[in-house]
Length: 225
Image (cartoon, rainbow, N blue to C red; front, side, top):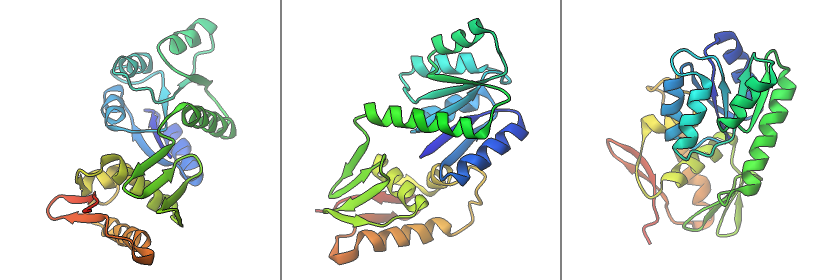
């Protein structure tokens, strides 16, 4: 699951990011409204945690912009505001829920889980398919030709991202940005290591090759049949 945190307070962003990653979420971070819009439109994300007070565009404006752009990702507003009318303003702008600062991490995680479940139960994209691969995003289960494939969290996220773009090539830089962290070292060979692991798992029992290297670009998931 991929979460976008939009928060300019470094301490809050650090605590929330760490808690989400410890619970197997992949996290991207934006510290301005403009950056939030840029990342959210590139998506997809399962939930957006959006602070109201941001430099430049504030959270209300960001929320309205995303909804106007038909981005339906669940949005949890993080706000220091306590007045009912101020919370209503966020909900009317298109937010799905709100959480008042200071908040308990346990409650934040519970609200994130609820929003993710709500999206998955109403989304036709709970099951993602390409060729003979099927991903159940809710159960975190992958199968190929009805054979269950055991994947780690990162392997699942990598396969999910490649499937979302198939059969188009995906630049290595985008894989690093979306599957790992935006601050991830671009010189590491970890992407290649995970691609090789995923290839091996997908090709077990004689399965045809689906992940292809596009030299000078990155990788693509493509059936050659």
